[in-house]
Amino acid sequence: MMRLLAALILTCLALFPVQAQTVTKEKLTAALPKLRELARQAVAKGEVPGLSIGIVYRDEVVFLEGFGVREAGQAETVGADTVFQVASVSKPLAATVVAALVSDGVVTWDTRIRDLDPNFALPEAYPTAQVTIRDLLSHRSGLAASAGNDIEDLGFSREEILKRIRYTRPGGSFRADYAYSNFGFTAGAIAATRPTGKGWEELAEEKVYRPLGMQSTSSRAKDFMLQPNRSSLHVRIDGKWTPLVKRNADAQAPAGGVSSNARDMVQWLRLELGNGRYAGRPLIKEAALEQTRLPNIIRSVDPKTGVVGFYGMGWNVDFRDRGVEWSHAGAFSAGARTLVHLLPAEKIGIVILSNAFPTGVPEGLAATFFDEVFAGKPSRDWIAHWNEIYDARFGAAAQKAAMAPYASPPVPPAPPMPLGAYTGSYRNDYVGDARITEAGGVLSLALGPAGKRFPLKPFNRDLFLYAPFAESPGWLAAVSFLIGPDGKASQVTLENLDEDGMGTLKRSTGR
Image (cartoon, rainbow, N blue to C red; front, side, top):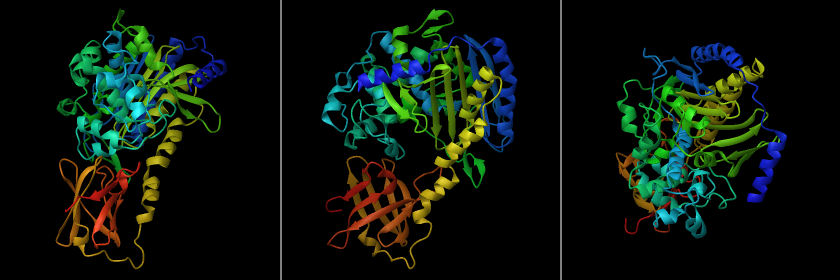
């Protein structure tokens, strides 16, 4: 596998050799007013309620502005100091934190997790014994992509989720397959901190945020909520951007829990483009930091062009006609979209923070900006292009397609059994306990440590529907029961928790 990876990298370098610098300060300066106008138009057209942009060029902050509003329907505007939840842009930030620990000699990238945490386990024995920090931060541990995400929504703690991922099914082959895993990444980052005896949040501040003067940046949800100048999350409800829910990502803080603003983020871009140097002084050894941007696994192959995309540790790594590119996007389905995109040969970096989902505005703005800088004009309407991609995967039509099996019940629907046949307790090692109760002729499902309760709507005999997604209240999932010989349900399957076959819970003995 590693020989194949090396051969592909050499092929990419041959096809897309590193270019001599072609960007000038004049070209970049000419592109900035066009970017400003495009961002203003995106907000005016309702593509996103608000966004903030920061750009670094050759260690200079050349653009730092906000557009739109922090919350739809309110007057407070977005500025360079408005704090957003950055979602998965937390991953390259976390890789920088771990690089600082590697730089200090606390761990190496190839330290085995079992040597740091003897109780850690993956679904299979061999990866459990051999998996390293590098493996987990590059999504090549074999852990399924969704492992932990679904039970995070139920309110389990980080410690409990990292304990329970051992009960999931593998999502691929160890060190051979790429599977983007929030909690695999989190496990690697948290393990790296164990020799210090300090928590992740404290170390992130100590190693990166404070040295870079990132005063508004935190890996704690409570700190974000205390920010007076913060942005709300938005989702589309009946075609309108709506601030519906709040998102606490503390459980996966290294992978998705950072909050920051454009003013702080550009300081981190300076560190990255400076290969560990900031404001003329070394903060992280270049040898430690550069490992995060080296290809570790193939993440994608374009079906049309055959071009291969790679993943490092917290970074997408791509070889294109403008040279190597480092990037990462972030999203919360609860209402956030973010992007960081760097061209190291040109010493250019852009960060875009926005407060809505789904939208392709961050990618569209960045692609247009780079076209303007290199060619003086965009090669296409990039915002429309990326909006189409996000709408196809997450928009109203996608939700409607997902709901198609439950759009209308069979005619006539089979009535459910007497409701007592379904009530009782069910469990498995991954989801934990589920409790089905009945009151006033209506079944309810209680899940998670907080006992989150959901009413069940009859659909057809032993199949019921419920709405598990707070940010998408119209998106329903099936709850299906298997009736045993005694006339009572012997198990229940929760569709939204069953992506990797972990959604079936057996009736607890005697309950």
